[in-house]
Length: 341
Image (cartoon, rainbow, N blue to C red; front, side, top):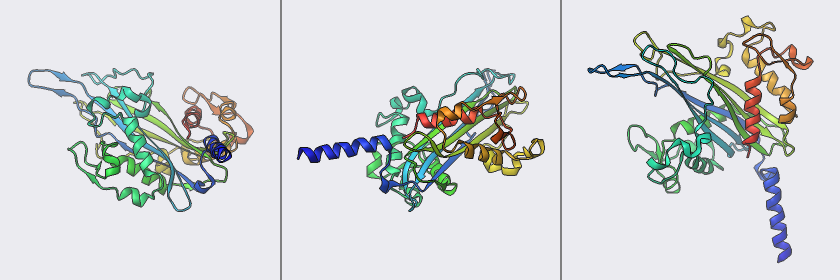
């Protein structure tokens, strides 16, 4: 009996060390996202002259998902970057554009959902429960989740017994991000045992009457030695302009594409010394990372091409394929390793 217990404990320890079991082999990995500026606010001056300054808000839900050969979810990590840029009545930026911008998971209890929650659970706890529910299901099964409208702000709250006590927030964007991850999924070489989601957020390019949120996202799979097996990197470069009256001058219900989704429409090829578009260059950089640890990736020799390009690869194997600055991409992959599970 003692011997049997010892074997079970050893098997559990090995599972913790290496990640998934052989029966959970990851065949594909995908990165999905949903971006909205719907919560941005116009400048408002009431009848008494009271001024409510405008606010640009970019909400991007991101999902890194590993799938098995049957399309079932093996692992899923979801997070939301809810990034705000504040302006004064003259449309000048009042936010600190050098400040760190945290996602909802990173904010933890600081996000403040627990007090308002009927089940007294914070956002990170609820999303963890929803991720757990997704494991073992196909995207079709996930999309068939029965939901209900709690109110105008919560149109799709889970309405099934196994979630009613753990998830009371609206989930349509999380499902949409997972569905996109499946549609965009790529093959994974053998050896992947952990999945991580990383990001880097910057509002530094915002200026008077125009907010710009740059969110770099990385979904990365690692082997048992911490080497990259496959990584997918993308950037959501979302702009929120205001007109002279302080009203949002973009379609709040519009579609906001990432650099990969824009493809040739991003327009880098014409300006590129190597005549390669962004999606082509990032694909080469992802390929270079495969087989390397995060420490090896971070030790990449770089050079400053100009003020806008402070970290361009300076190694023979990349100089003819990658001329973009890569600091944010490396940071996102490093964070995906730190968050891997």
